[in-house]
Length: 135
Picture 1 (spheres, rainbow, N blue to C red):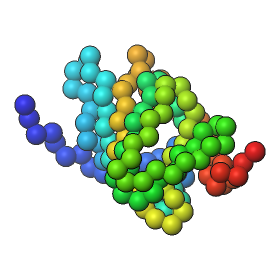
Picture 2: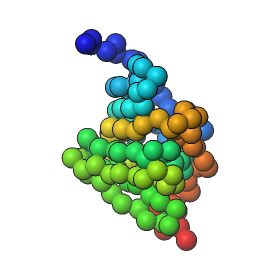
Picture 3: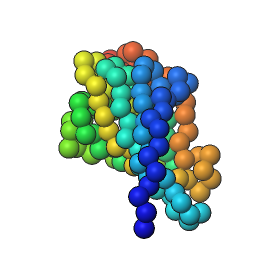
């Protein structure tokens, strides 16, 4: 066993995120047959991801603030500290902070059979989608 080295906090790229979002990797595969990745992600108020999906789904555990999650059918749900949201494989979704407070969550996911398909990034969401008033 070993204590993992501390990775530097990274600001996420604007192609995949709107607003200020930072990530700290907690766990990443060591061996070729391992798939699990865990990251602590911090969103500034109103910051959010672009649309995306995960080959094997994703668990998100909110640790601070209020998270917002949306799906292509226009559903937007708020998730609070201590709650975990599961997104099934292949489901387009976005997540971010509520407009008035920072939000932090643990992102837990497995790599796809082809690592390039682990997360498929798509277009940015609109303000109407973020507000739950699209459609």
